[in-house]
Amino acid sequence: MSEFTEYEGKNVDKALEKAGKELDLPINKIEYDVISYGSTGIFGLVGVKKAKIRVKSAEAPKETRDDTKQQAQDLVKDAFGIQEEEEREPESEGDEKSQAAIQCGKRRAEACR
Image (tube, rainbow, N blue to C red; front, top):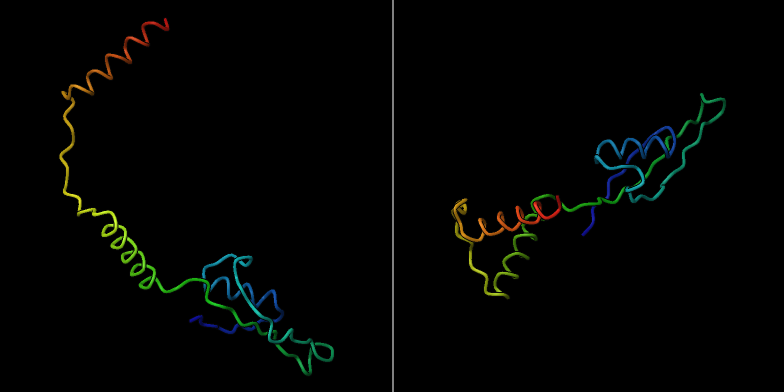
């Protein structure tokens, strides 16, 4: 279900600027329909009409996105049999593999000299 909001301005560009500020989106990312282009009237005094646009909401509310993300993560965990990760303790610097990698790097550095 998509929601629409209407914005008015002196012209279509001004209405788009207003929509962009309120939605915090760049103008080129806004999906809109022009309801009325507006008119300047006679000498800009009589019969002035504002431009009106209808903007489609680009994003779902944050709560909906978060719920969808959590549901997707749960489905992946169920499908692959992944259990909740437990907190791991950081590996100590005395680890044998780490020491071997350091020694290997030192040997390569000495060979390049």
